[in-house]
Length: 536
Image 1 (cartoon, one colour):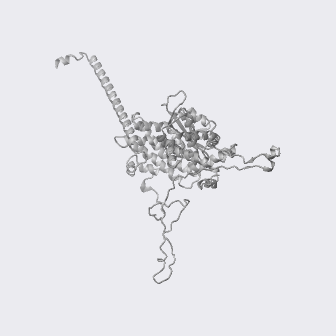
Image 2 (cartoon, helix red, strand yellow):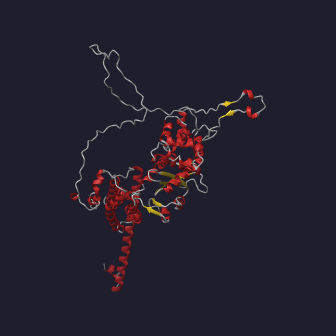
Image 3 (cartoon, helix red, strand yellow):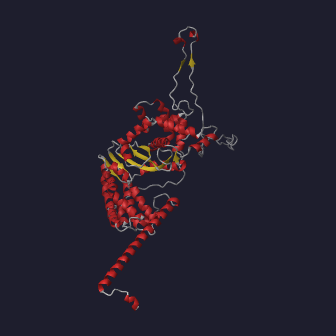
């Protein structure tokens, strides 16, 4: 013991220096330990998040039990009431009496053609025991749905020729000329493909996610040999003729008051100067005037922020996006107001909640976000003028948002930024000015979900066909997705819509012709002609 004590400094000053060195060393080791713990927690959360994405549920909806648990955090009963009113103080709401309909199968749509099969009794059974003929007093019906496999047929275009035999030897060529009707304009000259066949093939791939090689097998089963290469060539050739229509659609987007933008990855083979493993991007722009939405898909090799600026070069109005910094360049231009997306902010808190070891912090944010989403849905369902809607939304949602911001600022410096919760808080705080701008206009909602829904069919299809064989193929895919998703948003069956525009495309020359091909300008009876098989 004395030997150890002999190693200590002899003076008080040296002893104090040693204590300071040891204290600094301990503090450094403690800080390093905390850093390792944060790093371990980060990797744990990344593993949990990957496992959830691979094996877990996709929905971001909370179960009823989860919703009840949210009430335990942050005085959620006040949040849900959006004005600080507790349940005991809430005004009574009169609910009108209603009858509950017995759950059952939905009736089959009346527009589906009916074919009746009569199951009748014999003539002997129709005679009563008393000898009188029985009268029909009613009937019982049971409807069963039948599916008729795809039918094929050949449309023969016949042009009769006419000549005058009396003038054959007259020597006057003008009198002896053969007369025949002019050949109709064809979508794909010297090809067997009709507008209906091209529409069927395109809808199969870009709406139902059936790659061409699968459709090739389907056609073979019904007795027709159509190669996947032919189908690809048709889609590329018709795409070139659709460019004027897409220009009209893009102009419609720029004329609307709001444009929502999103992007996702796509792998494209044969890009000049890039390896085939490079990531390219499919951008989606959703806009248009009220009741006439238009979706425009655009393929680009990069995710540069210059792309949305180039696409919306003369646009003035609102844009709504997620927090990708590439949109900031567009949002900083004069005449454009950049609005954020609460769905993306909520998703980060939801993921933090799903992978957290203990529940609590993320639930506070989720309770607040769900509260003003509920306010939005409730007010949208009411018959309010735009001014009334905006005033009531500000009155009810602003207190919830202010309380959430206060909580975020308090937790911002307490939660390690590398963790899932820290990233969620940092995202919400950084995006806050954009996230609350939706309160300023009745045209705006709190999320960008409409654009996400428009891009989802492409993501689903990508799982089947995996990649595009060339940049031209990626551009053609963008065009077909644009037409199909625009038709769906306007309540038109995509196959009928493509049949109509492809049959009119050969005769479309002027801008007005392409304006007529927009979904809301097409007469309903024209679509019914295609549905009944009377292809013009």
